[in-house]
Image (tube, rainbow, N blue to C red; front, side, top):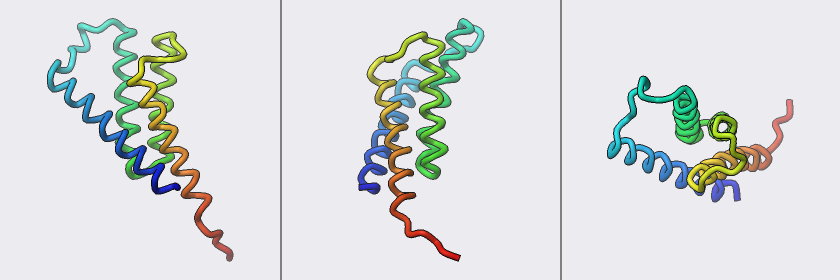
Length: 113
């Protein structure tokens, strides 16, 4: 079960990162001076989510937490509880990474000294 959850999260995370890379390649990165302060904060939140998805490949707990924190920060700045579907997919992926970490941690045999 843990392996399946881990690979679902990895595939979703990879597809999301590739989508954002593609969109950035097509549209380019906006100049920070052309953004409003709120848009700058949203940009930072998206970067935190994407870094979290990449980090979760190696460190599921840290990456999952970064992803979820980026989503929450984005929601606070945007003043929305439920964001558009792509951001909900990012949140679900972050939760899957945390679930994978938890399942893998529970399945390890206890080390006795």
